[in-house]
Image (cartoon, rainbow, N blue to C red; front, side, top):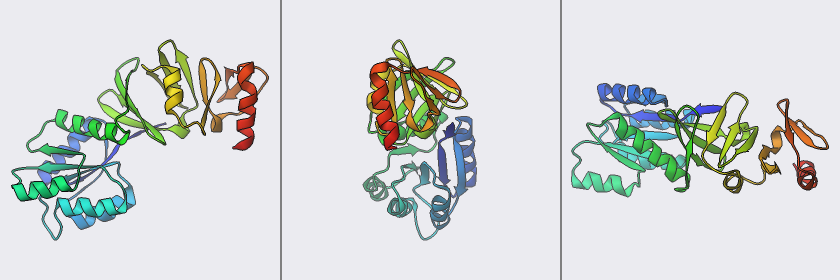
Length: 247
């Protein structure tokens, strides 16, 4: 199952905030909320767990965007994009010291938002970018510990690894199958195997990797996942049975 990347907007100029929300929605991202006050944003972030926060540096109230960023970072490592407009040197240096993932200067375009978000996701993945392709659209993917981000049309969507059923080799590509969707990535099965967490995935055939938690049945020459019979190599069967007994 794919999930839209969730983004929190903290901006006290409502017209600008509404424009940002519209652009993000057009790009396929989920806006968890639009907040004008830092204190409200802290509560919202705790309750809604956004993936990314867009913060205006200049916020009205007791906390500005830089202070909000620092407070958010105490709760969890939340990637920050600062929105800036004519910041003085002192404020900009404070913002830079807060180590945001990106700056966007006002006024900005949709492409500025798209690039900043994709930059964040690539940094979250430790800069290990896998250039990929899908049947109907250009795709890029980034593999993290528990999820893979896939570029679908104009946005990045996340697929939790636990939702992957199996992966099939297709020459220099591989196909990822979830319950509801299929993705064609321009990466070999061997590289995919190296990137995926070994405790959850195992190769059962030269052309297939399966999610151990999704296996319904193991037969002599195949395994069953979601009613799909996947070939099982004789040389890999013993290791598979050992792994199943230990999970």
